[in-house]
Length: 71
Image 1: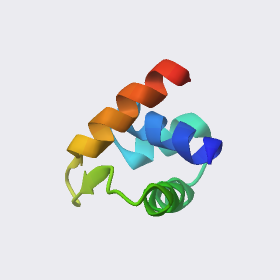
Image 2: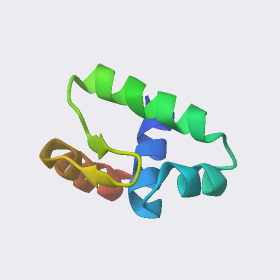
Image 3: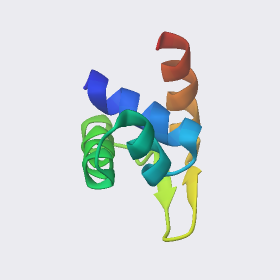
Image 4: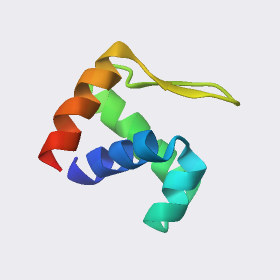
């Protein structure tokens, strides 16, 4: 779960899956799958995704604040 959290923080900080994948030297599809796994494990949606936009949900904002302090 720690790897999924790191990926989540990277996506939020980078502002996109593509940039986060580049920074983490990983495939965009891997980052996306890990984020989906994290959302399933937590039972909450963290990000609103569209083809042109990425934004945090309210739960995502709270989780990001907690994670960014811990990491």
